[in-house]
Length: 204
Image (cartoon, rainbow, N blue to C red; front, side, top):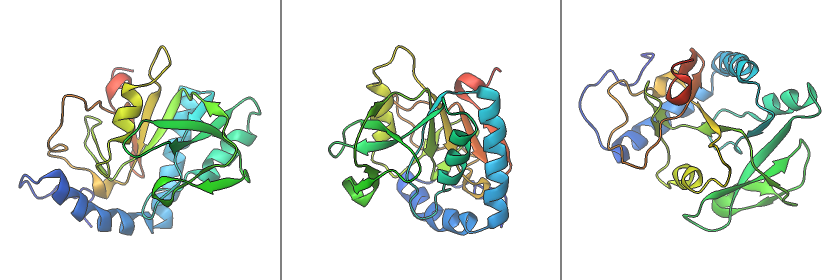
């Protein structure tokens, strides 16, 4: 497979890219070597950024499963905290609640597990799953707009750093199409090839 799916320069809509990238990402995520390399690059970047609290995601098919890495990250320093998002209602901002390995979960919106006994969290770094991405840090997701709404309504004084999790095969070299004025670039995208710095980390 070509390292980037964006070998075809023909402009496509977000809907067309989503349809194409689902199968590509599923294939990329099935490679043990891809996931091991991605985890190593994630570990290096997070070690450099040194957040105290990370919000991540419950993996859907084709998404990198960060739970084992998060569990190891927590064990290494007991002062660290991790959290998962919950959807209060459709098309509303996400709310993050503290999570630990083995914590009881319940089924939330879209059938995605979320912490059963929610204790509100305000993470200082978010791991964000990507269906596609470009090297400017723009992300293609499922189209629900949850992360855009979440960052727009963020209650803290400063927005958390945002680190996309993706596979190189899902890189869109011509750029994520149909960017809106509300779209914010991620601060980095980690793949099995390395950490692509963007947004607020581009100058570091």
